[in-house]
Length: 196
Image (tube, rainbow, N blue to C red; front, side, top):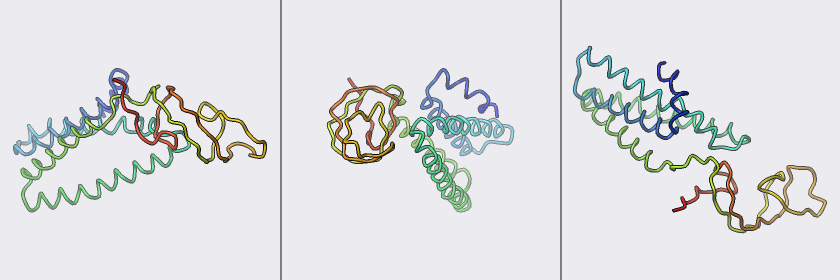
């Protein structure tokens, strides 16, 4: 609860990436501390650390999903995030239970905490430094066909028989360098390479 109330203030100062990856490391450290077989008085702050880390990871997750999709795609992105997170829980809970029953809580905490720390480090490495806000990038020229409305990305002439927007017809995009809030979509299939 403490993290959920303070995270909005924290993410005004730090990026979602820093908050979430730090939270994952805190959570992993807490799980690793269980491997030391702490007593009840030590276990209380460990539980607090795990809960704090969990909240730091989960609280900004909606912002990340929201920024990663166009408004028309957000429902699908949130559904996918919900399904994937629950699929991970579906695997992790029985795995933790089976490992705990077979090898003991200490060993299981060591393995699970290590996995959390390694995966947090991996997330920190693969998550782009830039958050996609006003990202300058280039587009190669392309001819293609898809439903679209006219705006910043679609500025081309019509024959007159295309019908009301959104409409679909073959059209050409010239090469362009521009900056805007970046999301992966049919015009942006991969994150641009950072300019050096």
